Length: 399
Ligand SMILES: Nc1ncnc2c1ncn2[C@@H]1O[C@H](COP(=O)(O)OP(=O)(O)O)[C@@H](O)[C@H]1O
Ligand SMILES: [Mg+2]
Image (cartoon, rainbow, N blue to C red; front, side, top):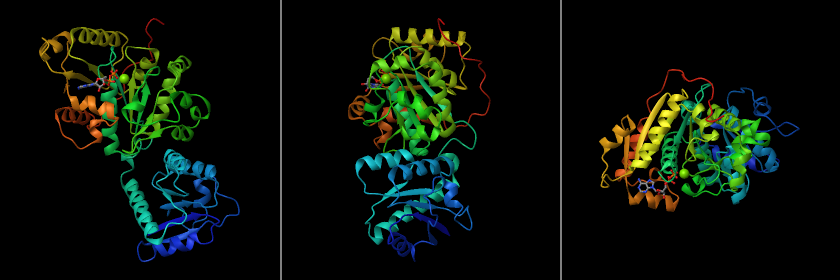
């Protein structure tokens, strides 16, 4: 038996919901009776005889949008198994804010009975799925999510390509449980790789109220249709100077407390920001091209991190854009690196095309050799990791 609560001053909506649910869904519709509008999920639960019995909350019409969004965010953080529907006209601004806040859907105020029934079916279904598999949605109860830093000493080797494909791959198995953070703070292109136009950036996320309140932070994330969230780099390259390594540390801690997978794309080299990300990361993904300078640079980076005592729980060595026709073999690369390569991503026109189209290969259904390589990389993260992290406090180069 499902329970729907509707908070509205619209006299007709509760009745329309009731008739849409009758005979279709096993549940009761409860109209909010409090004199003041609810601010916390508990305000709504307190109205119910069985406070635990709550599946769907419909907010509006008649509830100011900012109050409805704030309450939605609180439900998302506190009770992600409750589906919140906003009753509001679906204009693009509202849709985006609703997604950011964690609303499951929008209910057009004048929707007809079949549309309401379909919406309730979807909402009850997603509430049930979240309840039966909560660990697939967010960081498992109390345990921090996995932080995956994608790094390389060089630019143009495929960090953003690898990070965005990994993030989309995680989002497909854990919708709303994955966030991709663009720490290439000066020239990041995660927004372009995903064809999204963010309203907010990493800068907004570390300054102001989001820093203190993870629920606010969530509203700064940009939603991708795959169920992935992204936090893009600032528009202005100058903004990077106003972010410290400590800002990055704090941000990643906040995100890892909320999301199962936090994928971090980085700028070339080992800046303070990248070192802070590596310090918080459970997984390092090293990306190199199949050229002698690139491989030598990677070897140096591995040596520096070892000297700093920074060892991830799991390391993933990726050789990208490999065609092995330019006088270098996989064996040459591995002996120069002093370690084996875990995944070879072939040079592929499909990858270049996917960048230009803003649609990572793992978002689509095509199955070429590059897609298979991304899937092989993704599969390395499926096995759970149990042992605690081993490295100590953060180290900085040249500090
Ligand atoms: N395996 C590949 N085959 C062909 N082109 C690739 C491959 N990997 C990356 N690219 C292209 O190389 C360019 C740089 O990749 P990008 O991921 O932005 O690198 P980085 O983030 O390291 O600077 C992009 O245009 C991308 O499409
Ligand atoms: Mg990049």
